[in-house]
Length: 117
Image (cartoon, rainbow, N blue to C red; front, side, top):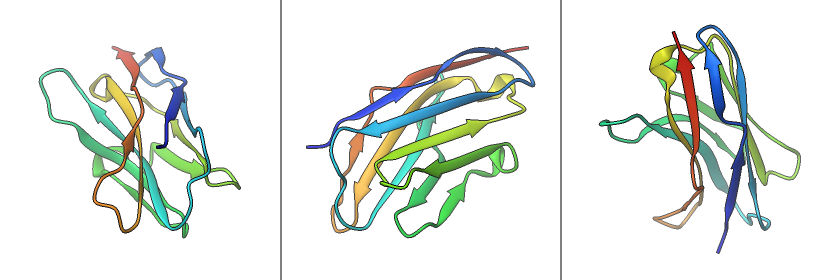
């Protein structure tokens, strides 16, 4: 069982920046993918960015050039640096990890990001 502890959400004005962080409570063994998803009110949860243990990253088109995902040297913490935030970025952001070979992964509890116009 892996628990993911998120931090860093909050309220920011449009154009501002926030940094989200997510730490796994135990070592994630083997090849895996960690990432961030978000869910706005009345909308489905959507992928924001992912980072594999091999170093590959992937971003939603809506955040390319504004968000950067990174992992620390242990591979057990993932961060999301968000700049030039827009009101449409407002959502609950969820951290996610899945080990390769497993069909399901683990989710964090979510952290609220609110961008005011």
